[in-house]
Image 1 (cartoon, rainbow over the protein chains, first blue to last red):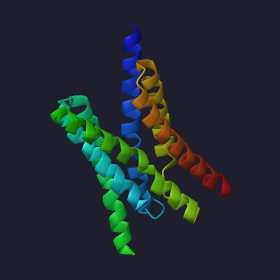
Image 2 (image 1 turned 135 degrees about the horizontal axis):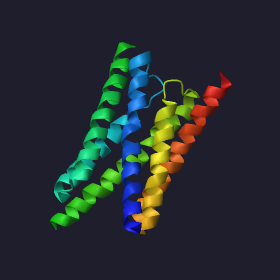
Image 3 (image 1 turned 90 degrees about the horizontal axis):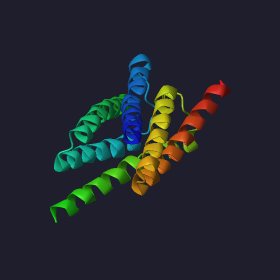
Image 4 (image 1 turned 90 degrees about the vertical axis):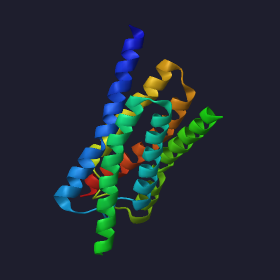
Length: 89
Length: 89
């Protein structure tokens, strides 16, 4: 039973950290502005998340692969938007 | 040996996703601007990371606790800076 609670906490934690990037994408789509967002942050973060996907593949852990693949796509969107914003200036 | 490689990939992935928030903090400290950063993103992300710390405590997993505690402090800094920026307007 206690282990069940811990798993639920882990699942909620995973959902939070995954969906958290969606409001940033919505904000970018609404305003078109990415000036205050750090390019380096999203380069390092996207690289790190892609390594988590590779890590998940090696371990054969579907939850690690799935969760990080979603975050990877979201971060890649923000990174692309940031690069486009930079090239426009 | 193969497991060793996988662990190294996991460690590099963890370091990347942890330190990635530092460039964003440096950018905020340099410019003082947080307009384009999503408040909702950092509220949800900080909540999620704090749940990962709780999850780590329940499992007694020091790496989960340590890595997420560092990210928690970094995200809390960005969240506080964003809230201050909002209240100034």
